[in-house]
Image 1 (tube, rainbow, N blue to C red):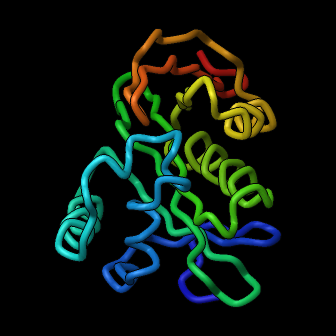
Image 2 (image 1 turned 30 degrees about the vertical axis):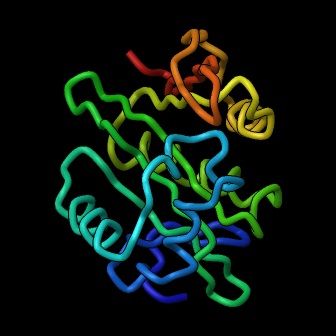
Image 3 (image 1 turned 60 degrees about the vertical axis):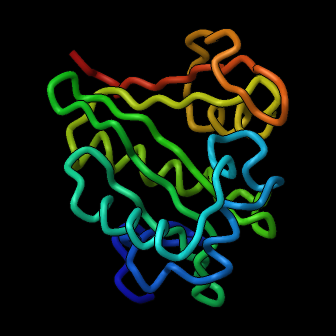
Amino acid sequence: MEQAFLEGETIYLRGLRQSDVQPGYMQWFNDPVTCQYNSHALFPNNEQRMTEYVDRVQRSTDTVVFAIIEKTGNGHIGNISLQQIDWVSRNAEIAWIISREHSGKGFGTEAGKLVIAYAFERLNLIRVHCGTSEHNIAMQKVAEKLGMKKEGVRQKAMYKMGAYVDLIEYGIVREGAI
C-alpha cells in the first residue's frame, strides 16, 4: 500500500495526485453511465481540465479529495471527497465517483465510512451531508447504510438526460455534537 492515508478492509484512500490523470480516469467523468446521476459528463473532460482540477483541489482549503484504491491490485477505482467544507458551521458535503466496473460492490460504502469518521474525528466536523437524484436508488441505500437520515427533497434541482429531477438530501450528525 503506497501512501495510504485512511485504510479499510478492501480499500485504502490516499490523496489525489497528478499521476492519476490517466485516460481511464478521465473517461469516468465522460461516461454517461457512470455519471448518470451526478453533475459530471455535461462538458467533455480532457487531460488539461483534469490536471487543472487536481491542481485546484490540492491547493483547496475547503475540499479534500481522496483516490479510492482497491487493495488487491492497487488500482484507482474511484474518488471520494469532502467538499464545500464550512469551517465555521463545521459541516461538509460528501461525494463519490466510482468506475463503472467497480460500482455496486461495496467500495463506496466502505470509503464513505472512512471519510465520515475522518470528518468527525480528525477535522472536528459535526455534520456531513449529500444529495442524490431521486432515481439513484443505489446511492440512497449507501447513504442509509452510512447512518444518514433523509432530510428533504430539492424539487427539480438537477437537469440530467433531458429532464429535471428532484434531489434527495441526506445528512448525519456526529454523536454528542453540540
